[in-house]
Length: 609
Image (cartoon, rainbow, N blue to C red):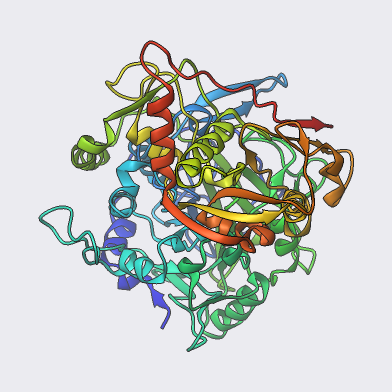
């Protein structure tokens, strides 16, 4: 049965406690047009003026603060490189780069934002765990769940990465208990999440019932807000088959509309959908005006279509998955404005949304909704409880994580259509594969499997240019194996074309390629034609469609993941060791303190724009 907020005592204590100090200064962000309904009374703290928070209103209307974030991915410590920065658009049209993220700072920002807001809810849009750095991933993300409990998270949807270790492990994160293989990491049994994970569109294949609760209702006095949680229907295409075994993923819109009706039948008319699916804003700046020149004009991608079709009974959409930042109003099917938000990723931003609750109707006064993204800047005091939590888990991880495994002469970044780090990983997998089969011809790496850049600046006491096991773990945290398969040249060409066609046509997934494989990617063309067939070469020789090629990939691609169905059809399978081990061996063998590894030129793919 769907739960309500009284099922979480910690939530009751937090939402009812006395809040006294002044609200923090708000950063600039996109806002929905329109003022508070005229009949709303002024708050005790001076209404809705700047610096007054969301106010304490009486009478018909009550402001409810909704704080939200998404795609944390276990980033308890400040992310490094570009993963730990956001760009801010300045009034003069220039941009400013700001270091952002880290649970110690996120906790401080959220706690400051809640002050003077007695009606405050904190929600998330999925991928809280999975693809996590060593401090969390080494312990099956128990540290992140503990951190989210301390952050007073009220509710989250599941994301695709919540299924990385399968449904049973997700249930353990929700309900607690020691890991079935690794056991307990401390002298205390893991308690699990004291917030509900929602998975309305993820069904048990046999029972056809939701895997977890489909919705949850937050209540305070006479105010109640329902939350429906879904993840993207395409999750099985981007998660290993074992992780979603026995599960069915239903259409997001149909599911949300179904449960919106159910909530209204139960008397809940204020509804927020937590959707782990996202869009692509026209600007990378977190404070970009998504509604210029018109509502929803500044965003494209799956969430735009979803937002246009989700029932008008839903008042706001908190989204994620694409790791982008946006605050947009997209008209619902009835033509009314509706807020759609995403707070980038890795805890770099949070979204502060004002939902004005109408006590007479029990619904949200949609024209009064305001929202803005805020930077989790690192110029505020660290939350001491988060520092203690991070120190505890770092102490346990240190013997493994601090070990040096290689040396680099500069940042090896994951950014770009072809990236220096993508080249490095593909080369590492090719080198490892040749220890299993000397006849291996090439290696292909999925871009989504490269989670962070390798930075030259030291992340700890190891020294500049030193690559630690923890840093490599953050780059490749999935525990995929390196698999070898045999393909015909025709199949290899088809696999490369699948980067930009089929399910990848709208949002191409460009494989990172090992040394020796070259081709031209013509982005002025459309679909599969963007991969120029005649340009594909291996060590300077054209690919022979009828010849056989031995190809190394990770187990995710070898299972046809990311829409690469052809890569799931190889022959003569040989399963190797962990892909992280391949990277570690390559770094150790090809770098030293006196001869560090330099970033590649990333010129194996010729790009025509």
